[in-house]
Image 1: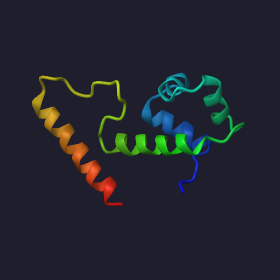
Image 2: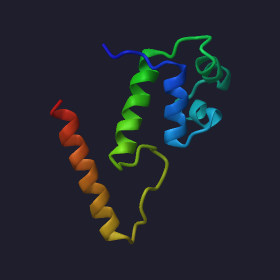
Image 3: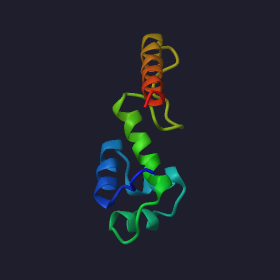
Image 4: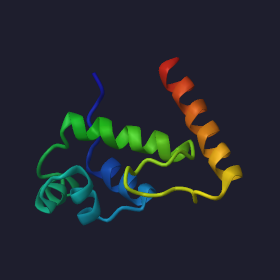
Length: 98
């Protein structure tokens, strides 16, 4: 079982992912007050949210786009497309080899 992220780890993760509290709340479909309570240490971060944050960080750190609704590369930039696909393939290979 994965350890839950604490308030400091969540704050650091949001900074690294370049997400505001409100953007994060919208992204995971929770009330912004819930995120504030997590960040203030009033309520523990859920296990599901902890796993999601860690997965997003792994994707971001490997250079793979992690936001579903964000276009990472242009349709006409085939070199960038190949590079992004290769990063995704390398990430997936390493992810499933754990």
